[in-house]
Length: 144
Image 1 (cartoon, helix red, strand yellow):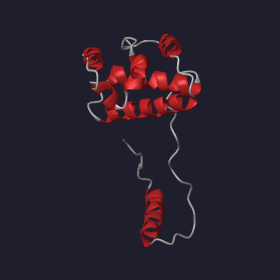
Image 2 (cartoon, helix red, strand yellow; image 1 turned 90 degrees about the vertical axis):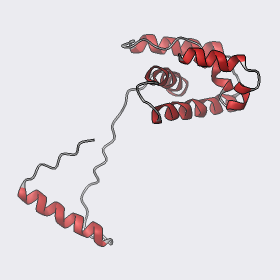
Image 3 (cartoon, one colour; image 1 turned 60 degrees about the vertical axis):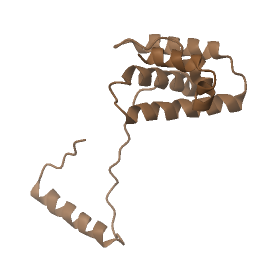
């Protein structure tokens, strides 16, 4: 369905340039990745799309890279499952353009190390509550 939408947009002369993502159209011409497609095949498809794109201007490539990232995030915000194949494709092209290969999701540690002397009264109360919870051996696992 998304390929049909792309084709319809490309048929309209003024609509694609007005969308702001017209320069990305050649990058997105390869078929949506199949479910469970391995990383090597995905990277090969992305590299082929980038090679066929043939844009030499560094500023234009940078602008396209930003648009790819923005487009992927917009798709993720709205019905994640409906756009999953497109998001996979966008992420692969973005990663190959920026890093040379698809990137795995890397988690960042978000728990700050304990410290002494908070200025905020709210943070002071939180630190005191942490001490009480540690002494009571309550399971404090966070679930997202």
